[in-house]
Amino acid sequence: MATLEAMKGQGTSDVQATQLPQSAPGLAAAPAALPGVAHPVAAKGKRFAVIGIVLQLAPCIPVLAYFAVILALFRQASGTLDPAQGNALLGRAEAQVIGVLILTAACLLASLVGLVLFVVALTKLRYRAEWFFWFLVIYSVILLGAFPIGTAAAIFFWIYCLTRRQEFLKPPGAVASA
Image (cartoon, rainbow, N blue to C red):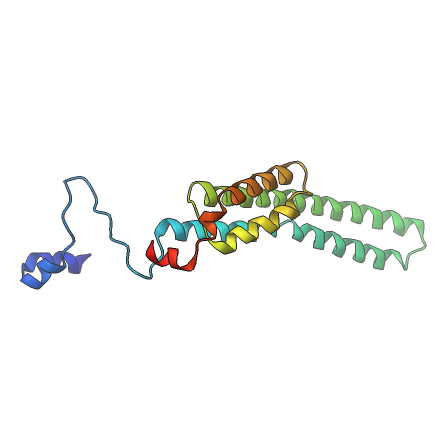
């Protein structure tokens, strides 16, 4: 920014040719899109979509934690025949299961945030990549089993994507001319 100000102060003819066009006072000039550089809204939409995908993996974490807790409990319980040891083991198991339930709630909340990011990327930011289309179509099938929120999201994604599939599945020549 300082070099731009210094170049403006010099007033040479080559600097004047490279200066950005001046806009009305109080209005910022929109920079022209450079070839090969993604549009900022599209880049933000892609970021939202990718973060949403990562957050959709969050519910897998408590499932893995649950299996780890169960396997550890079976290993510990297999060698104990004393009722006193069994009661202590049961108290420890209860604490571990409560921890897994808290983790499950946090991961489901993260997954809901991921769904919101998907909706924002689709509707507000109008992100229209072909990979995102196919991901949402396939992921909607998986979401159908997550009643009630997942089912509602799956129906929304199916309807939205299939009614606007021509926006996602543009021919290769249409992208270059746009």
